[in-house]
Length: 141
Image (tube, rainbow, N blue to C red):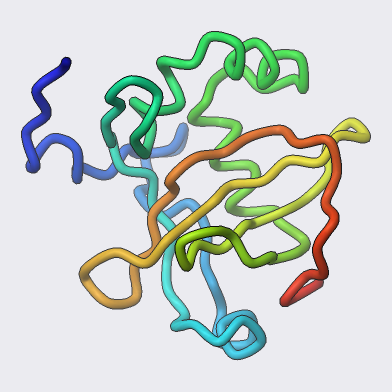
């Protein structure tokens, strides 16, 4: 089991341009979803036996990295940035999370986010290609 330090796992990972902000839940989106608006960040995160969050959690999953490459993304970092800045729907996730959803290359993809301290900050738990969306969106572009 890996030992993770709180200051490391909660360190935001910059995107390719150096920004820590990956996207935003606008006031309009927040109102439709019944949540608070805020910026979306990707933390370094952690993974223990397949459970975790953030970049580390995504990086340890080789099968998922292959799926991401097959969709044309060069890295987990690029995949997360693309979803968080281009999502077209928001759906309800488990445990109070939101799913930022879109399609790319005729495949459904989703990034699950949850609120984080400080208020007005959402962080990426995970991001995955999925077969299809079956539930009704809370917000649609």
